[in-house]
Amino acid sequence: MTVSVQAAPASIRRPARRPEPGALPAIDDRDPRRWVRAIAAIALVLLGARIMLPQGIEVGFVAAAVLIPVWVPAVRTYRWGWALLGTGVVAAVMGWWLDVFNQASRDTDSSLFTSTTALLVGGLLGFGLVLWARRVLTESSVGLWFGIGLAIGITPSSSLFASNPWKFGFAVPIAVISLSLAWKSGQRWLELVVLAVLTVISAVSDARSAFAILLLGTVIVAVQLIPRQSGRKFAALKVIVGLAGLTAVIYNLGQSLILDGYLGKATEARSLEQLRTSGSLILGGRPELTATLALMNEHPFGFGAGSVPNLSDVVTAKAGMASINYQPDNGYVERYMMGGHFELHSMMGDLWAHFGIAGLLFLAIAVGVAIWGLAVRIADRRASGVILFVSATSLWGVLFSPFFSAEPLFMLMLGMLVVPVAGSVHPRLNSTTSVIGPAQRAPAVNPAVVSTASSAAADAAG
Image (cartoon, rainbow, N blue to C red; front, side):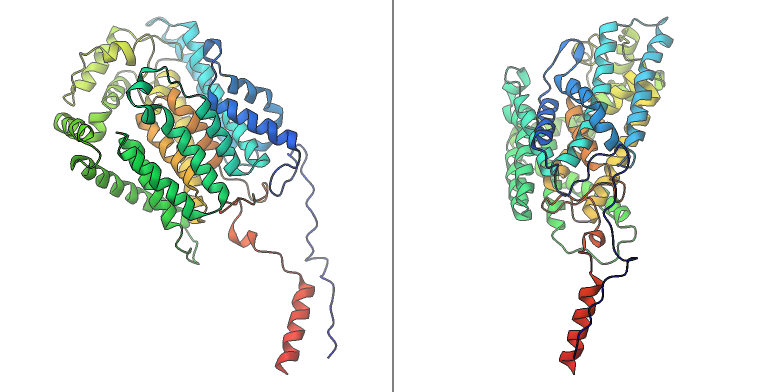
């Protein structure tokens, strides 16, 4: 029997799409130009290293600013990219306006205004840089180079490092680097091994939050080994609900392990004291939250990027902390939280104090974008260990870490989790992560081949 092979109809052929004006070059895996990849890698290292210049400006921020013409076209290829940048800029302007509005009732410091605003604007620049780097490098390489920068930025001379080198120095850089390398290998089991080792180290190093975060990441990576169900309707929403439940389970499990002494006697004793005084490990461990809520009640619109705390602010903060039986008359409020500037030990508190309601709006959009992006990855079985670690650590920092210390991972999280617009970013041939869905990843079917195969099958059947 003669097999007739017909060419595919013109309507089925898919010609290469012409890049849109102003868009970055289309890529299949990474940019073929080595010098472009080198620039992206160096910029990521500088961003993670936090090399300080005068007025709170960082070398990484300068690098991101120089590369603005390169990464701005990439922003529009990601959903909510411009919304994040726009609300961030509005927040920076609001920080200046609050200083002007409150100048009759409180002192302001121009140097403080510059450094505080530079921190926010620099974070926006870094976010844009990471977005562009995702189009130039594989996503595992983005994490790896950023992690190398974090390692370079370790400061062994700090008092916190001396008290616990793992917790306050090596933990985050080693986690980001090792998990990125495991991701680059494409082996889920290797990610699980690395996560398990990091979890054990954190458990014996008095790092309670890191232990819980890594345990959560281990469970989620393990769950992704289960084949995905065929029905995908509301998959991301179901993941969000599941994450909330899993987080509650991990919290209660971690609390039980701590109180039973499995994480060390010192951790057990400190946790028992926090439970005794405040009734909660969270409030007992972070009494600054109650100070923030008390200040919000008194000054709902915030203070300003350059505003200096006054005696009334100190009294209000102490009253809030005393409400959970914390003893605030130990110099902590005067020296740290309000020692010439507002440092409320949470991203929420710091952004509100410095940038008012606009700062909270920016943070709310950022958290929403991050949670949705993470849920989409988990639903598609594409959430790597490093992305889970960075995301969970950053989301924890919304309530429990100062904006200054949380910002590096916050930039990386947002840059990695913003969901691309469909068809605008080509997939990275990198382990389990791709920017398009499984249906789009399926190989294109050539009608001519199908016709030939069907005829051959008919011959065999006859």
